Picture 1 (cartoon, rainbow, N blue to C red):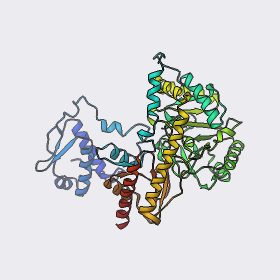
Picture 2: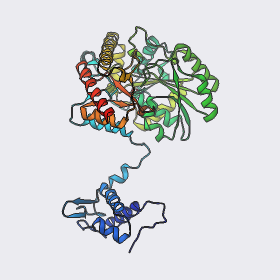
Picture 3: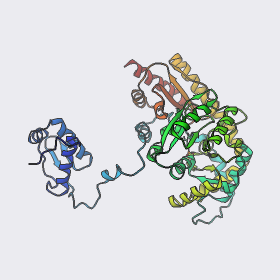
Picture 4: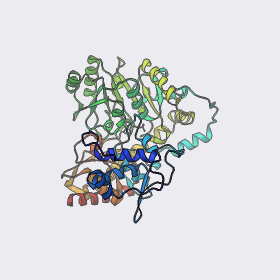
Length: 477
Ligand SMILES: Cc1ncc(COP(=O)(O)O)c(C=O)c1O
C-alpha cells in the first residue's frame, strides 16, 4: 500500500492530495466512488486526521471531490480523464502576472456584490463629476468620419496633437506628436515601462508610501522596489544617490503632485534638485502625474518634465482623474526612441487603443468646454474634501489626524491608536463602507486612504459615520 514519504520536503498533505488526484485522473477512483473517511484514511496512512482534512480540502478546491453530510466524501460526477473541459484550477494558478493584493481583491468583491457600499476606496470621479453632457453634445454635433481599421499603435494622430497642445499650454511641457504615446490609462504606461525598459532583477526607487506598492505588476516583472522617504518638500536627492550606490537603481518612479496616497506635493526646488541628481547618475525619472489638474488653487503645480532639457523624464498623464476613468485615455511624453519601442510593444499586445475613446478625447481636449469643466470639478472636489474632513473631525476628533490635501482625490488619514488593518476593513465592510488600508501602499499599519471623489456629498457624511463605527468596534476588541 502507498504511503507518503516522511523524508520528502513536500508536506504530507500535499503528497496525499497529489496521490489521490492522480488516482482520480487515471480513473482508478471513478466518478461517484466513495473515499475512506478522514479518520480511516489517517489510520491507513499513519498520519494525523488533520493532514487528511487538509489533503481532502486541497482536492475539493480543485472540484474533484465533494462531501455531503451523511453520505461521506465522493469523487465528483464528471468523468475524470474523459471530461473534455480542462482543469482550470490548475491553469489559473499559473501565468506570470501575479493576482491582485488580497486587500484589493476583497474590496473589489465587496464593491461588485449587491450590497450598497459607500465607496471611499476607489480613486475615481463620481459619475456626476465627469463631463458627461459635454461628451454627449460633442458626439451629437460632430460627424465621425474615421475608418475602423487597425489604427496607429502609437495613437490617433489628432489626439497626439491635442495632447501635445494640452501639455504645452497647461503643463509647460514641450513635446511633439512623435514623442507622445497614447495608452490605455496611465496604468498601461507603467506596465509598458516595466515590461519593455526594465528586466527581471532590476532595482527601482519609489516614494514610500506609494501607489506603486499596490501594483503586483512590479513583482510579476521581477522588479525590486526600494522606498524613498518623503519630507515636507518631497524625496531627497541624497537618498536617491545612496540607493544608486547600494542597489544600482535603474529608475526613479515619482508621483510628485498630490501624491497617491499622501496628497503631498514636491516643492519646485526639490523637483529641480531631483532632476539634476538623476541626470548626474544617468538614470531616468518616471513622472506619474494624473492629479495635477485637480489643483484646488488656480495654478496646478508644475511637473518635473517642464524642467527636463536632457530627455531624462518619462512623463505619464491621463484623463482618468479629471474627466472619466472609463475612457481609458492616458499618454506618455518621452524621447522618441522610447516611444518607438513602446509603440512596437503596443502592436504586439493589442494593436493600440480603439479609435472611439481617442476620437472623443481629441475633441474634448480641444473643446471650449474643458476649461469650465475643470473649474467646476475643482470646486466640487474641494467641497467634498471639506465635507469629509469636517465629518472626520466631528466623529473621530483626536482619534485620527491628517493634512488637508490641496488637490487630488483622497485624504490620507492616520489613526492615532493601535489598530489592525484587517479587522478595520472587515468592520468597515460589515458596516457598509469601503476604504483602502494604508499597508497596501507600503506603510506600517495605522493609516487609511479615504477617497472623497466617488461618493456623493450625502454619502460622505453617512460613510464617515460608518467608518467611525467600524473604527470604534475595531478599537474596542
Ligand atoms: C498615481 C497613479 N498612477 C496611475 C494610476 C492609474 O490610472 P489610470 O490608468 O486610470 O490613468 C492611478 C490610479 O489610481 C494612480 O493613482
